[in-house]
Image 1 (tube, rainbow, N blue to C red):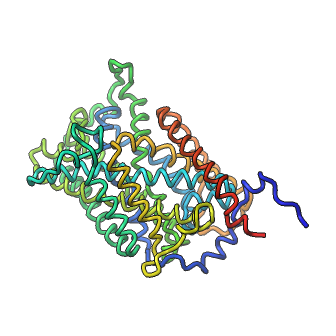
Image 2: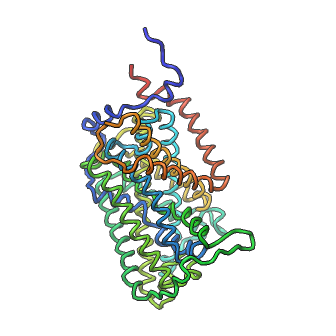
Length: 482
């Protein structure tokens, strides 16, 4: 009779990649309904949002000037390094769970649990943050047509006098959850339509804006470094780097589409393509609109909550400004869709592996969707978006995504060393340089986050360890395998 495995062996027990690949064709948890363009739309939905409509202008005004386009290039290089690593894993292990599943296969159970637990929080908080931000746009449009909510329902407590609950943010979270519960393809078609409208809106801004560009606004391209009254540095090349750190969080989101691997028609072919397509299209749009925006308006005028719309309003093009606001309101819904889809599938994968109760790992008998975690996430994110100001929610988002990037890039290095001959439908180029770039850039960005972010992140991770050692380590499906 063999001795029971040691604690360390249990903590790092991996899921076999060969077994994951073998099980892939046998699983019928979800319906395979997503093609490459629907997957790409999920990625675009997660990426294109506040980066286009808000961050590009604000960072031009605050830190980079016209060189905000260069900041997007710097951020894009780092994000592309992680995207190439995601693409290799997506083609090799096309299983629901994204970074969590990839980590399970390479690093073992406890590291995988921590990254899955981490992403569950991060994705849910992105939903709450975006829903809260969307509420502001929507209420502004409602106000223009003479509709105002009661003061108590206009925002979370602390966001304004008399505010108690952000009703619009809560409602949009619940509606997206219901949409994702009914049928994945219905939600995906709706999302694809919304993303198409959003992309066409950005193209409209570019197409109209090029006729109003004044090259003088691009001079100097990198404004001279300044120091404000608080001793903070702005502009110069350091300002460009600072802007890159901020806009980096506008150039991830493609990872959300990898969580839908088991709903893809041809995952090993389409997932890597969709990852690279979504990032490539997004970067092209970000770079172009950055140049157009800083060409039609002096960068110093862009430091407001709606820089794109206001830039065109200042040109006397009120119809364009209004259309941009409508597109922003419509398009930001796709970000909520992408990240709620991702969060629900991470939750489902954790439960299917026994690390959370199996009750959550049951797909809908009619619609074939992970309806239990999706509806619960709808309620949780609705309450978070309703009761907490956007600033408090946003502080919880950043560190987890960067931690996932580090895990993915490091896992590529480990797997290339351990199993170099493993069949791969897509291979990350220039290994080890590409993964190392992704790791280094992510560590650098994490180092610049405020202490409160680390504090809340560590509290969540500590709670995750309690759940794992109290439940997951004993109920893991691997623990039941002789």
